[in-house]
Image (cartoon, rainbow, N blue to C red; front, side, top):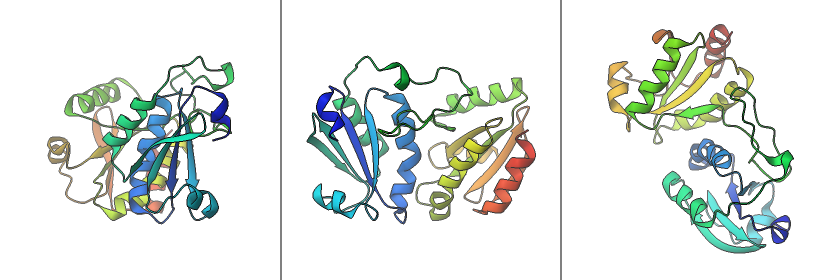
Length: 232
C-alpha cells in the first residue's frame, strides 16, 4: 500500500481466508484479472495470518476487495461477484508505462513469475470457458494440436468443486504441456449435456477433440494420476 503512494497505479487487495469457500471460488478469477489488468497492483491478505492488517482496514467479511489510490482507500466490494469485481477494477484502472521487469510475458507457454508487489506477473494456467463459441474454439485447437486438454466441469454452488479448484490450478502449473480449462456446468449447459456430465466435479481429458479419459469426484490423487498420464 505504501508503494502505491508514489505511483499513479491503483492497488486492489483481496482479503481472503483458506477456509472460506467463496474465497476459493473467486481466487482463479482474481489471478486471471491480475494478468488482464497489468497496470493495477494486485495483493492478497490472509485475514488469519495478518489479523492486524485486516482489522486495521475494517474487514469483517470474506472475501472483501479494497481499492487504493495514492495509499488511500477509494472503494470496497464484498462477496465473490466476478462481474462486480472486474467492473470495480476497470473503474479504477490507470494505464501507465510499466518497468521492463514488470511487463507481462508474451510467450504463450511461459509462466509468469510472482512479483514482490502482488500477483500481476503470474500467468493464469487455467482457461475459463465463457461461452459455447469459446468452447468450440478451444476444441478446434485441441483437434489441431497434440496437447492434452483437461477440462474441469464444475459449479460455484458445489462445495467439492470449490475445494479442489486450487489443486487443479496447482496441477496446471506443474504440467505446462497440457491445456487446462474450467467450464461452469450451469452457465454452458449445452456442453455439459453433450458430454453427459451428471456428477460434479467431473474432469475429462480430450485429445484430438475426443474424450480419452474421465474422472468423477474431487479425488486429488486420482486427478493427479490422470493428468500425469496424459500431460506428456
